Image 1 (cartoon, one colour):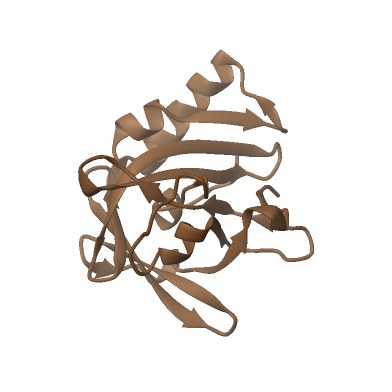
Image 2 (tube, rainbow, N blue to C red; image 1 turned 135 degrees about the horizontal axis):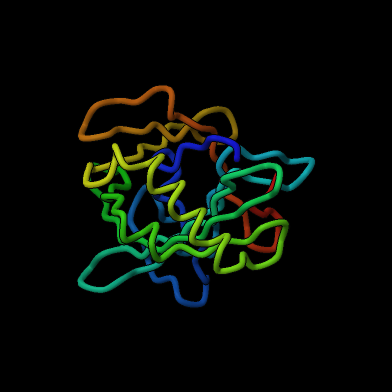
Length: 177
């Protein structure tokens, strides 16, 4: 399985434009049904992760992520977490429970119970060091897109920075190799 950095994309979500109300900066485009495509490939219409946002309970923001965790076989993990906006950054805390509730596809088919258990175990072990830490993402203009700059407990993590662009749901982009 290819290594991936869940922390860099933990704030990804797939939102329904019909459900989205007005969302704050920096995720306001999600109010119009736009999705964030991390590490976009325009030709292949692929993203390392695909994200959108929608209002959640108690003023929070629901964040459901589709993340490419392996290229071969193609494994997509889907998680749902709560995030908030702090100083115009998307912030949240990754928990073991988030991974325990994740579902997976393997080569575009639902993972079996055995595959899901193995993937949850591997990803939990790989991400254990960041559980319970606040991860924030700032979006900085970069050409015709953005750079997602990651911070863990307020400390910049330049190795986790990624290119991001907003796409419409109908543009055909998917979390895929």
